Image (cartoon, rainbow, N blue to C red; front, side, top):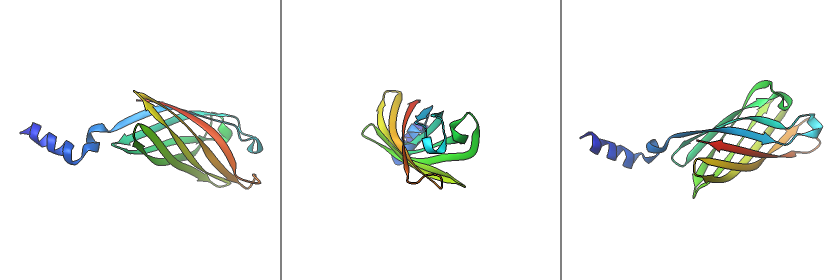
Length: 135
């Protein structure tokens, strides 16, 4: 009886069978006009079926110190490709983020950019990023 019920649950809600957490690192270029250093930080991705969400702490000028702000986003998994979009904002700055890349077994390498806006920037700054993930 329970096997039949489990089969029904997995058929009706297939995403329940593949909930996963991925953990890794994000690396981004410095933002020269904001006097930041290159970013090296943690990155957490959560998958339920083909729907994704992520979060990571934002660092103060990309130092080891955390700002209390979180970058959050959502995305999709289709045909072995991860697509994410998100961003963060705080008094004095905001940015949008887009990352994408393929899954290879139990790992993924994403590339993308953050587009920063600040009173201290004369125009938006496009910052290259790379994310490595493992499940």
